[in-house]
Image (cartoon, rainbow, N blue to C red):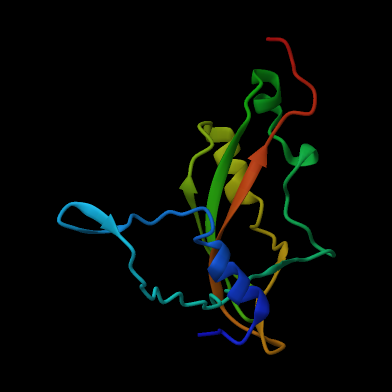
Length: 145
């Protein structure tokens, strides 16, 4: 049976081109068998996400790197969860993964306090959305302590 799409049909065939199935057996010996294996192709819904506000970018990067973290050579990645409302307000900023350094975590939380994002849209209309965003703090030049 065809999916109706040549590329999907080819992908179905290629899924078993290198084997991957064990033969059926009768009395402990392999036998020829014909089977049907249904493969269902389904597109996952894409969750609408906010966009960076080019007029008011988040406070991330070298200009906002905590001075003491630079001196100490601190680097890391944090993850921040937040809600951006349809009218563009950022709410409920929460650290969901620490960078391992309190100063960098604090900078992660402050990065969006003054905005930096535009609301997600569905069919061109702004909506409320909650999402997580990773923030990576990497020093461009290493300091010697």
